[in-house]
Image (tube, rainbow, N blue to C red; front, side):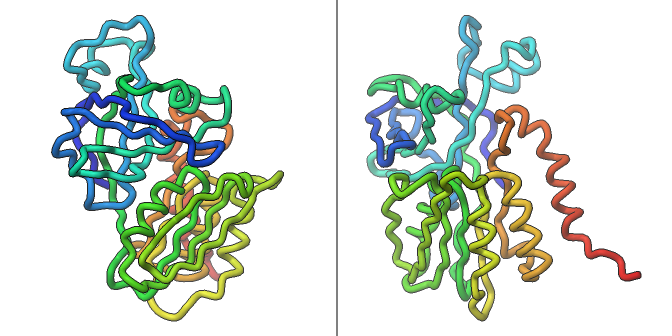
Length: 278
């Protein structure tokens, strides 16, 4: 996965919207977005920077210097969000932020933003785009992966077959996902079930088409781990044909998840090790 150095970009809110009840759409602009290296990948992401109130940071803001010189309690908090769209001609960067009332850090912040407000971020990073040579595509995710799935669908080759499974709370959270591909889109409504349970069942029940698949599976860590084993071990999908990672973990904030993710990565690697035959 590639990411620009930890240079902090300052953008301004141009406008906001609510495409669904639980999503705040931010359209950002400003002189510092000119030449932003977005376009190679469909999972481009930025990390929004949340300064600690009352701390006087050096300008320009340098996260590496801040971490060297300031106590940990003064370090800004970061939240990663996929780029939903980038209009290079207009200089407009669109980011969707999941919003569930007063819960969390970024959701309430995004809901309160108004045109002209500053937004600080690092990046972009990214690593995935749909392969033009794959026989078919599989895209799976919860709300956190929906922007990347939407961006990927716009980049499918004309008529490329794709099976897409997206889990959201209910029908009100569905979005329009246009694509030039031959897309079979299934919306799964979570209701009271655990996050990702319906996704695992849907992928397990899929009659896999013949040929080579290029798969994108992202979202809550528990279901991602289960689907990684299903695809890698049970279905034999090669690693280089699979983009898969836990974007978040139930019961943890982003800092907690980042701190434990290396252990999680080791665990999912172990999942792929075949059991020894007695």
